[in-house]
Length: 72
Image 1 (cartoon, one colour):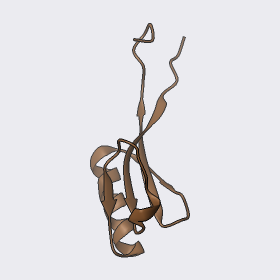
Image 2 (image 1 turned 90 degrees about the vertical axis):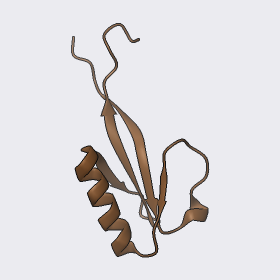
Image 3 (image 1 turned 180 degrees about the vertical axis):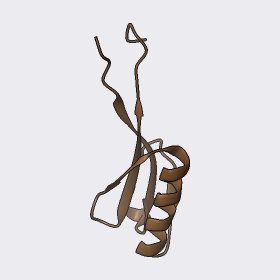
């Protein structure tokens, strides 16, 4: 039986640091949307992460994590 990957939040890139609360992902605070997009692009290329735009000045990057057989 195939095991479905689970997306895990890997990083946050934002122009609005006050909008990000809690969590365990590193937060990269940038000064413009252009810098936000550039930083997210390079992080995603380096780590093979997927970028998701929350349309509020914040991008999140996720990676797929596959649980080992047996759920452990």
